[in-house]
Length: 248
Ligand SMILES: [Zn+2]
Image (cartoon, rainbow, N blue to C red; front, side):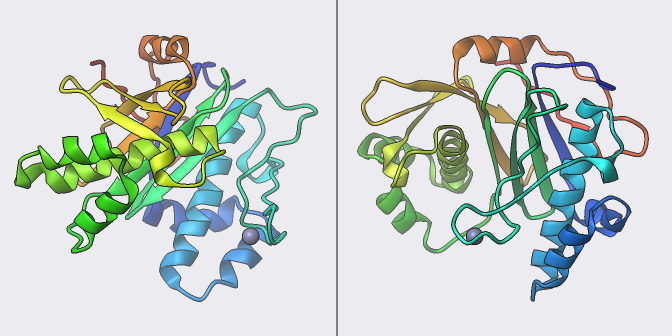
């Protein structure tokens, strides 16, 4: 490993910056897939997420980003837009989760087990109350409606990213209401499955003033490992850097 084996690190990068240097690291299939997309913004996001993943994960595997072996076959349609998979042989056991919104790309990497990360740009949406009514559980909705009006948009995205991060970790849910997020005043949060048996810590990440982001880890001990982690700067030439993890 060419970086310290921190148990969990969330890497943060700019989509614009990563996309503009993507050609240096992505492979022919990734470039061809991105080039086949109609909208420039979609193209930039795909290139940035491919390039960012290579730049980050290559450091753990000690290969150059362009030589990282990664496949992305979609389980439904077989096109190359599925979640990234690393080979089992010759690579350390790593779990990753990728999220993007606006110009922000997050890549969470764990050596402990599965993780889920989600970021959203906080923006005004006319449909926000209807979406909350449709997707939030009764207790989430009640807590959200108690928030002062000026904080509603940001809090909506806190619930939303908490649900998405837990969904990415847990998978097997069919409706946003199947995961219930509880946010506390001190910033500690957790997500719970509907049967109440599984409960996962959620960590709120500071990713600039316009973004809200959550990281979901499967067990309390993982959360403690994360809080004890010290972060180092990214390697030279890497356009992604580790996020400072706030301690509640
Ligand atoms: Zn597909």
